[in-house]
Length: 88
Image (cartoon, rainbow, N blue to C red; front, top):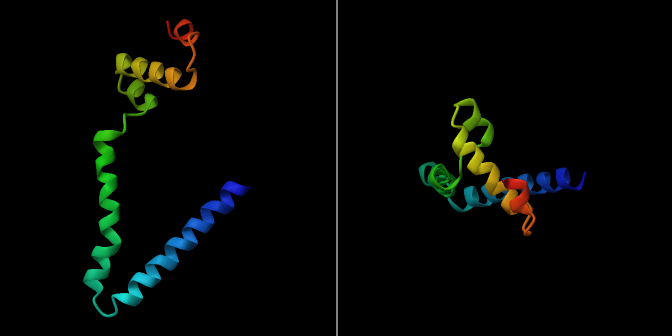
């Protein structure tokens, strides 16, 4: 319940921020569009940074890469010496 409420707070804060940006950029709608779009360009870098999902790798029959991703997940979850027993 708290997480859902928190998401709505961020949505409201974003709407207020857009209204404030629009107020200060009065009549220049092109500059407003640039100011709103420019921060989202950061997400283009996710193409190279984020790995493919395990489900997608399996659906494309790239089993070795999927196994490697599963091993990375196990290493991150189980940061103990016993994790090697689970992985192997």
